[in-house]
Image (cartoon, rainbow over all chains, first blue to last red; front, side, top):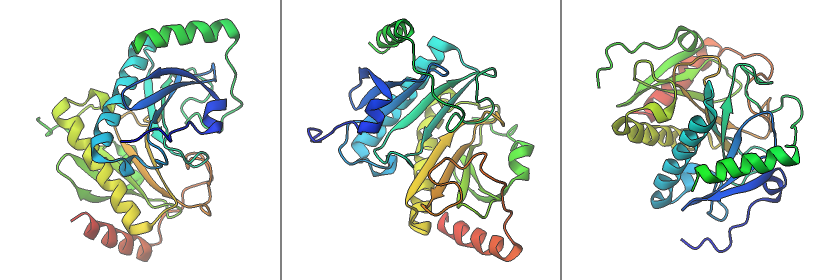
Length: 137
Length: 137
């Protein structure tokens, strides 16, 4: 598949940091220190729905999403994972994987629309990116 | 896999109607006439996360979720699908597949926590169950 035309949507790029490139997806850390939150963005130009991915991409992207789930669980030991492909605000296909805790600010509700995101302080960002980048190597 | 101990969580059962039994999952129509909304509930006792399903179940469950997405899209022609495994309120593994429109009551936000659910009127329920049951046969 020709992925040369792929670009991360500016709205996703502005609110997250590059974390790792998997074989089929870009991983980005969402800039919200309230939750360990990763975006999985398949490197497929104009993709909108998971079911629109070509079968030879859909399967490995599913495996990459599960891999991100396992890494978030191993690293953060959350009470629950939230995994969601919504795309109402940014149509470019992206899947949220979020580690949730019973004492996080949105619990037990979904995280979207609850309060305002809290950008990582510089040191915390560097250390989280280092931790997670290592986990995805 | 022995699924004899599987039971649908009462909170899911009370807010949805049985729609179809696929090979690995129960499908339920959420009783909220504001959105075409199906729950995919793998028939695995005590399952919580998709990644905890045994590999021989995880793969076909993923295919069933995609099948539900395709049926909802074929039947309702939504502007966007929302697909989410949250499980913060009911821990039993269940995946939401929701057909979204730019003029639905929650757009462009996720549906959870927006207003109150609107139970289907009796006739509309019967006709929707008939339509969707046929689509899953």
